[in-house]
Image 1 (tube, rainbow, N blue to C red):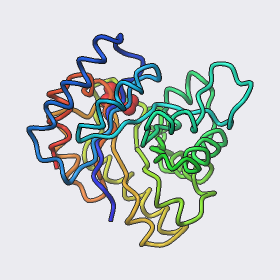
Image 2 (spheres, protein in one colour; image 1 turned 90 degrees about the horizontal axis):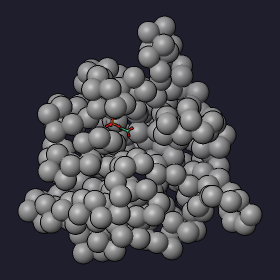
Image 3 (cartoon, helix red, strand yellow; image 1 turned 60 degrees about the horizontal axis):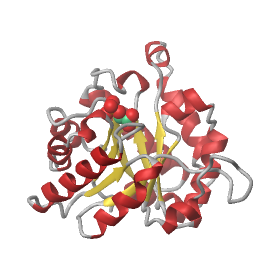
Image 4 (cartoon, rainbow, N blue to C red; image 1 turned 90 degrees about the vertical axis):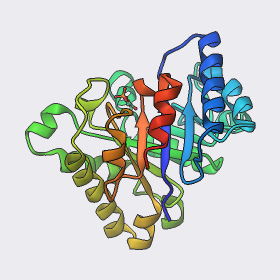
Length: 252
Ligand code: PGA
């Protein structure tokens, strides 16, 4: 059965001392809550992965990375491989975030390769999809999502598909304060699940957690997470405040 997941994407924020404070206060806060029915994931920038991984050993949360190389190892200056992530205790990794697609030219094909690398190391990919404002307004948003999913992840076997998480993040909602309504989000989540069901079967579709991301915060998380096909959130800005982040994680 699909898990509830709340993952904090710190993006390129915080210096080391603040990152240290933040992860330790997340760990402390988490001790006060019962989070048995949710996997909490903290995704810091690469240089802080070891810190987060160390703290997570005694905490009730998992460590996630924000990106991974599509290459295995070798002469790829500036890249970080899935095996390196594994050696630091990383459990989850975001792939294909819209900021990587937009600023670093990541394609669906790159994303497909990254997912393969992660699964080889037994790291759970959190694959992001989402449409731009223009694509939503033109009414083509479901087609955009379909292509991202088909090209990025549908090369997997049914067994491997069940090991993945998908995050629906409308680009117009990320960092803007314009959260998708719960109905808008539910429509796309149900659509993604129906695509998985069509390609594989309903058992596989019921195993894949689908998260919502885009200005999700402590105020709107409960309503979003109550929707049938929304299994949690990928949280940007609000994950930088431990209290808000934990409140979101406790919104099921
Ligand atoms: P946001 O970012 O919560 O700040 O909108 C979400 C994300 O980009 O993962």
